[in-house]
Length: 328
Image (cartoon, rainbow, N blue to C red; front, side, top):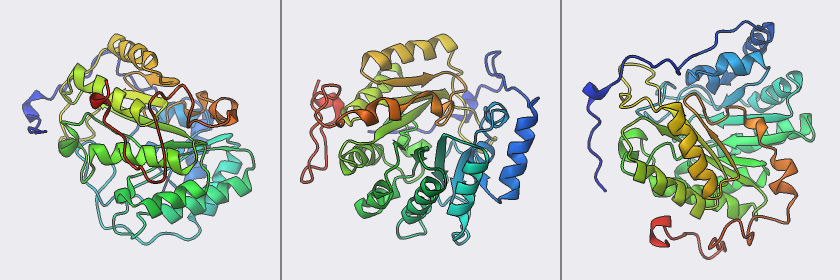
């Protein structure tokens, strides 16, 4: 499927009234910022210029970004800098765990830059961080937002063996725009990673993904992406507005109206997503703790075979599923 370049002249410079960022007015914001700084941690909140960082930090929550702040990929939408990464810091997992304890978190989100320079893509660093957090804060809900590890099963297994409760890997955009928007990533690969994570956990994990809107995608392409995610077992979805980090990044073709985000939430829920966060300023970990998997899916016998997933068959010998578009 072809992908034409997004014309920079299409960029909508003026932000509409519904794109508003709340500035910090809560002392908890500054204490959170100080804690993150003191423990020498990176957060995707700052590195990716998340518009909600004032709100989340003001509530004493943050999404920790491990494996450094230098990414080996140069995605057209992302504010995280692309450069040769530094070596992994051996004590970082414990520092993340200490921050989680001091912030009294009951739900932690751990993400990372893409580390294509490492043989395992940083998977073992994820594993060690998950284990350190669980040992330090027993009973905490652990959510990971991971890169694709270049679809290496053995690397993905390292993460899944550490038993995260929520496995998040973002599709980011529709299939047609993927080659332009996501450096080195592949649409089908991302779907496969989500499906394999579910299989490796024996169904005992919640899989989650997200899309950015406003890059020139068409309605029918969004709907197909939602169908593809459902066909691969994903039950938690985030939909948000793409915001251009700098003039070097992809243009904003459209500022999607709040009522259209409401429409897509209704569509997604009708398709069987169990939890949908959809709005202009929604990001992957925005209000992540609002969904309580430990009180829902994780107390069930398992996802595999659940009528919530008609047609989803997972086995060790079958590592691919038909595209949603081919089974309607």
